[in-house]
Length: 494
Image (cartoon, rainbow, N blue to C red; front, side):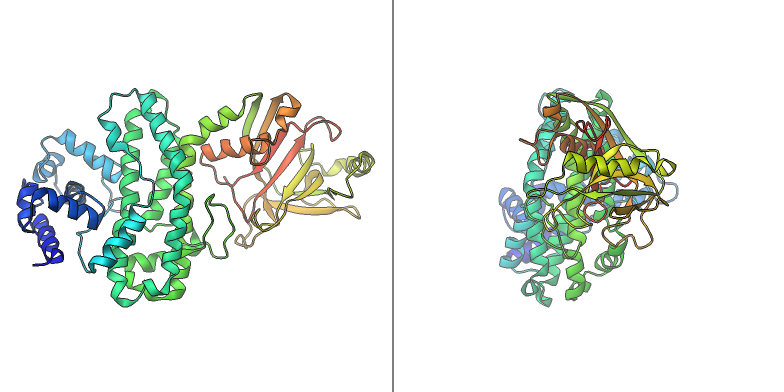
């Protein structure tokens, strides 16, 4: 009997005895090997321990049983070999993300029985490459440590920083693999389904459930940024196929309904999307399902480490005010700022704003002098920034001769998938105080202090920045164009 048959027989034995007390020794006998050798082989092939597999299958079946009329939590707990209802409830909550008393058909995380339909070389090497490539959390290792709740949270924050630096490259490798036609021949389809569906996606679902339970356990201490739970909800939706990206719904539904649909190169291109580089910010021609997963993974990490990071960035300055603003339709009117060999002079500023000063009947309600910046809806890696000095006026404001204008709408227009104007008149608004040079410092920042801090507060609160298609920012001169700017506007979608 070869090892594939041995593992298959062992899995079937587990499935037949999920409601019984079974030991590793009993299971390994089905593979005609020792318990230690069997556990090593199982983990190498499937990327999980035998115990994890049994627990995942029991909790999946337990959820289905709880939806049956007249079922009782205590009876289901005992049926699946939990000693107490409390231990069952904790395990159930970690796995599904909600307690057994609130089980719902559309929220259950389904972990299906494992099957082996691969060769030794194909299944083993490729599954290890992607499943083990991501920087998974070490929650289990922390549970046995004597740490305060604050220390436990700091450990998770540290993990999030490392994962953010590591995972984008692995997602890019996943995109590359999905686009490689040689990896998607008919004989590899079953293997690839295990790698992607029962490997990568299932592992992220499991990690999210563990993170949620772990953070809920220390939430009462006040150290947890509650925005992380919204980020986890959105990630779980994507992992279960309930995408928030309307233009991806059709292809994702097809893949989840019948994985053989991945034979179609066109469908795989929409699943794979494009590579975005180690920072996860490079422009892509096709935004695919892997890009959506990458973004959701980042959002979880940002909510964990960005609040503290943004606070540390405010060393010599202070955020006096931070709020989200929804404006009605409006129109920016101004002139592009010339740089380099043809700089914008003080006289140029005076002439520009003297014209806008005469247009008092067209004020928008946000009447400060600003430098409006955007990239015409393209990524910053492919389109230079375009800066315009001017003001936000009412939507129907006539445009003076020689001036440029850009329109803003309260929500995305019907052609909202089109990049560039009209932009969205929703933004984060931050007012700063402190040393002027510190406020405008660029060394040590991606752009400068005001930009970075405003952006990082937004990311920490899991508010959507509509990058790149509707992305814009603006420096605000609260005391007029001839003084330093001390406030910042950053596009968001609320």
